[in-house]
Length: 214
Image 1: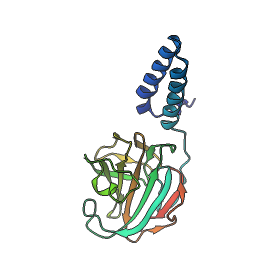
Image 2: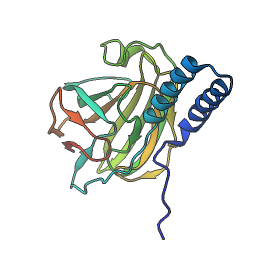
Image 3: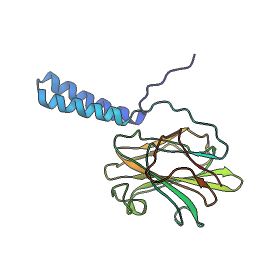
Image 4: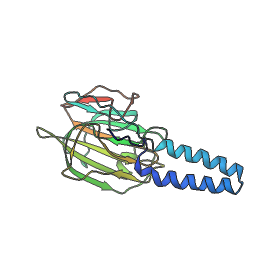
């Protein structure tokens, strides 16, 4: 029998538990207004860490969205921190109401994981990808092709969670981490890749097709 999982990311358990505990204490003390505010806060935290099951399509050379949110950039660029050649960059902005669990966009092997501290500009700003805290995951997609997934902390986010290590074999749609309380994910693909999304599109992690790998 298949074991059912709680549809909440495990990283959220301490936050949810602490908020629920404060709500209970406030209610026992008879602080009605504070209790109501704490109920709302607990509900928000619970919703933020929700983690429903997703059904990842099996598409030849298909690159699947690593995050829920809105596409804010689709362009050819060079970013020497992650690649020496021109690449196709797709950026997804996650607001506080999106599901924040991140997923693997394409099957392969993890080449390296790099975490860098930084500032906390608004994640949808131009400064964010240059100065904010980030965690970059380089994935070997085969045939000498590498894609890079970059988790970027936002204005509210202060903690990037990435469970991957160099050498890990991964599959498309697999959960690999999250960013607590707001953020964005940048995806760097080989230059020849063909995007099927445009700026303004809403995408779903683990399900939406972003591009065909070049």
